[in-house]
Length: 509
Image 1: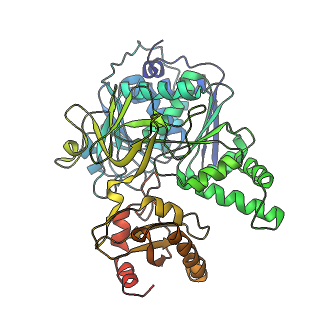
Image 2 (image 1 turned 90 degrees about the vertical axis):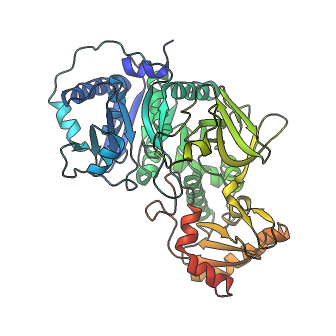
Image 3 (image 1 turned 60 degrees about the vertical axis):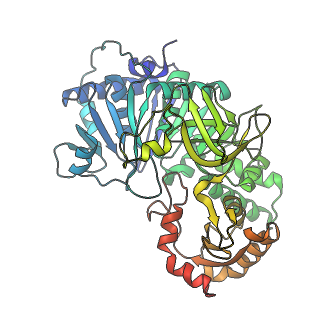
């Protein structure tokens, strides 16, 4: 059978599946054959604008039908896409020049003929005749289809050219584990600028299952209406989901200790009754949240990967160990160095260096043979399951010289229902300090203090928290304190609240 990207390029999707796309004020549903026909017409539209194989176009817009069509059309033309996260990149002539773009399709125009409003696409397609069948397109494994950008914690995002071989091997390996097929319906709501989110659209076209695409803001509305079988989400989403389910169940029984059946019923109300499994990754998942969703009858499988490696390990039905991020996928080799840092080799690497980065960044991450040094601390058990213990950057060195891995302590803190998010500070200090994001912080300080005391009883002396400060502003993508995958930007948070932290260490909370 032809490789996945070749099949996308040349059409003929499996019959029967549909794609449904939610965006503000719109809900579009197409059979996959109709989607492919629109993508072929979009390819003709791009050709009419002078776009040719080897050119590069940019897309800077929220999830929408036009995003999907431009991406699929580019594959059909062997044109490279660059997906830009909305709000992270300023739409300007400089963006086109910096990344060598022929055209940029954006949510809004910006006074440059090369920047086109993405809203112009559908009216233009409706005025076009169906194009003739084009010659077959063939990709080599090392060919590039898209440039993706790291979320990063500081500075200019690094650009990485993703190869066809890495896309094909990742989707194929996941399919072996999960067997997505009709009547499956996969639900996607993270930005399509993240390449992995597009994988599930590609999977639908080659395996015939349904796929639903929404924005984060419309996710819960779309979930109730579409009744998916698989939800692709990040831990922050499932934290919100747990709180929503718990609140609904407690309203039913009038108690803080809602029974399991009440929780299951409300979980089905929010997610639908067809859930086969939930997928999470991109950031550490709270063990409490994983256990909660399992208890609601919604199996959730955690995995591990990064932009530079794509999906590396995954728990799956029949191969699932709670607390781990699963075993390596086919085509991936995982090993630990002498500092227990996770290293990854791929039969088909995403790439072996960055396309855009500061001097020395490629050499810091990619070894001479293409091995990716992840910067994550881990362990591997006797059965090959990988456990991520934290980032090397997450280690806080106290004044006594002790190294504290803070991730698990932070996860335990976030189990408190009044703590929306938190990180720990303490580098060079004699104790840890919690920077807590909590709604109505003044009213819940006693509950936060009681929870911290409970957490302290569970940990050793160096891991105990000596104080806390409450931050009113939530950590968010918009204020630069979370990445696009909802990971805290630790350095940015510490810098933003350095005065509050200083007062916290001075005895003022």
